[in-house]
Length: 268
View (cartoon, rainbow, N blue to C red):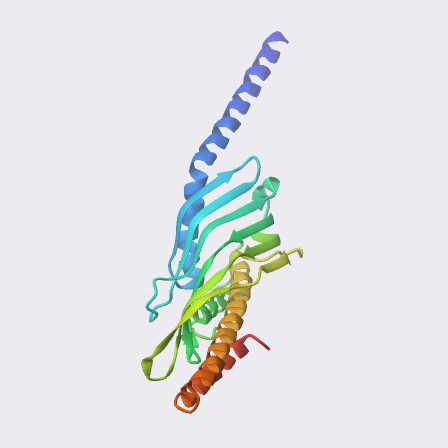
């Protein structure tokens, strides 16, 4: 009996040691795994580059910090980045990491810098949004707006699903330029965006995929940005009309029309 108790004690100690060692190993490499995942999977969803300076994860508290997160611009646009985030903080229910559905209590993104580049013929943010839509549509088996008709959509994999209870973007600013006629561009002043808040994403039984989360967040960011840029262009056009009178009236009215057109893309 004593030998059995001693054996059970030794076995229990070994199990604890193995668990602690596993947690330490995962803790040491999880930051790098997540960083690599963002930089490899993200571009497949958006079709633009994604870079992260650092990821810091605490498994015990379920918190994570993502520093220096940058989303690149699509081909054909001159600026290197579309969105730049200094710091994003994430709070996850730790026990859900082992389940099929990861529950994210809160994601907060503070002071992102958004670069708008384009005009009525198209812009960088709408292009990224279209890429994300095509990716999500392809996974769900629907028709893709960009993919050739002969290319079959790939079925969705079993992967983990998400529930995001609260997603908040604060202190966002937009800068960049509006393309005018004859290849000319109008620089934008720095435009503040109102807070963007999304709630109860994927709270159903099935949750949402990471691609669907990106789709919803990107849609909200694009919509808010286009409204701000459209309003700014309209205001600039009105100001130019008053200042230039007859000499610049046609150009100013053209800018006014561009502003209304850009704002109307997501203003319905």
